[in-house]
Image: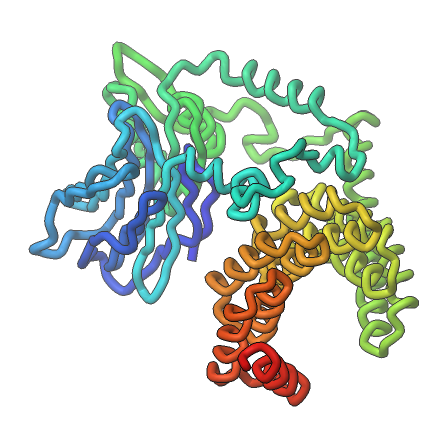
Length: 480
């Protein structure tokens, strides 16, 4: 299964590439809400290439080596704010599936993955994605009227990291300067094992130029680019494949780049290297050596941890961290052990380092939130819990602990909202059900608490004797 990168307002993940035969057998609409729509594609193909285009906004997936099963509609009307229609075009050597945007001036986001032998395309408009990704200010909890409406700290403020605005500005300036010479329409490209001749035919269509391809131009291309001028993308591909482009009277001529040096001709060339060139190589060599040392230390620490020697293991994990500071798993292990051993300040620090590497790491946010709560950093804990329940992956512990935190702050209604979200996402559990019943008690809602305890008793949960005794006792007290 191939894995592509983020593409011009469209994210493609895990698209299956090799099935049994080259035929698309069905295209239909799956689940659909106001915020999201699923498109299900069944069948098989050899390779694919995708391009997003404006005027009108649309995304086209070309399934090479495929045909369209007889009887499949070539036009499917769709009602909703995301996609207005799906068109299929069957040509001699490929099938094109065209997703048309409901807003002809705006592209939409999509993820694509394989499930039960089908290609599942999930799409949504960017405003919705942006709202979902902002965490605290857009979550169910913040809409409940809690104190999250107050000033929100960013991660730099929470952990005291220096701002990186200057570096970001420099990066944007460098990118702008690089792209200044390209004036073509911005597009998204996704090629998987696509014949080079077909690649350049696509650029001929985009540019409106005639095309001549030298017989020596051969091979395949796998590439994914997002929102780049088409002429910039073409130059990049030419450079990657050692090709050049000549333009004569509105015609592109694509041919191999002529050899210009003895090295390109295969002759022996002896070069001298300056200290400036050698220094990065030495740094890379040291990084490789440090990582090897760190790997050996991680194995040693893991063995000690398995023997129950957590403090000794922790010391070795920290030594390994000093050699390999961008290893997220190592950082998380260190944060976890510090928390287990009561080192909340250090657990908070290491969880912050993991968030510095990936601000959407829900597990890191959870350890940071738990540590902050232990140190009475309630404002930071609240925001970090919000990040934990909106990050990836979704983990039940984040929701359960957030609700427990809110209960400790006597915010019972908000805690109940988080427990309800826990149940919607992960399904019912005895721990959450008992916690919800307890919240009803705290709110003085005796009848509701009684009903919940009776429900727990009849749900068939696998409960230990303590839980069974608690539920029976609560029913006797509250339900009589």
